[in-house]
Length: 204
Figure 1 (cartoon, rainbow, N blue to C red):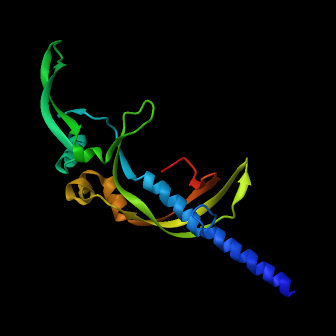
Figure 2: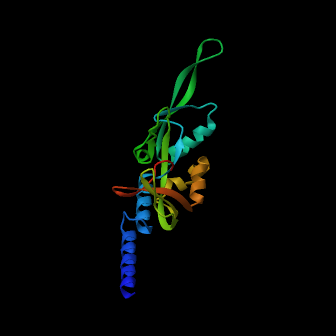
Figure 3: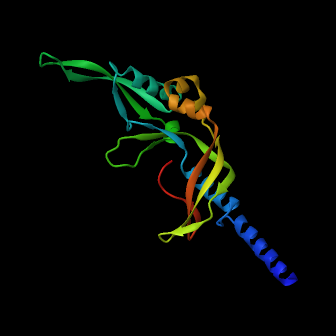
C-alpha cells in the first residue's frame, strides 16, 4: 500500500511539472500559447481603403470625418487636388478631392490586409494580455490532431494614445466601444504541435 501511494505521488508530481512547462498542457502552457498569438495579432479595425487613398469631398462627409480624425492624430497626411469629372452636358467640370497618405507614425499601425479582392487596411490600436486561464477541456485527439478548448480572461494592453483622443473616439465608434470594454473572457481552440501548443487559425 505504501509503495502504491508513493507511486501515485510521483505521478502527480510529474503531471504538475508537465503543466508548468511552456509547451505543456495546463495553465502555464496554454497561457504562453495564447499570449504568443495575441502578441502577433493586435486589436484592429478595418478600413475599406488602401493608401494612398483618394476621396471625393462632396457627398463623402462621413468617410472624410473618419480619415480626418486619423490625420489629426498624425497617422495620415492629407492634400487637396482637383480631378475632371463628366457633367450632364457631356463636358467636364473640376471636382474637389482629398488624397490621404500614411505617415511614418501611421506605418506602425496601418497594415494592408493580405487578402485577394480586398483593398482593406487594418488600423491597429491595442493588444490583448492574457491574465488567467479559467478552464480547459481535457486534451483529446481527433483526425490526428490533439486539441483543447481553453477559456481565459484578458485585458487590453498597450493602447495607443491617439486611440483615446475625442476626435478618434467620435469618428470611430468601433474603437470607442472596444476601449470601453477593456476586459473580457474568450474561448479558443489550441492544438498541439512539434513546437508546443498553438492557437488554431481562424478568427481574430
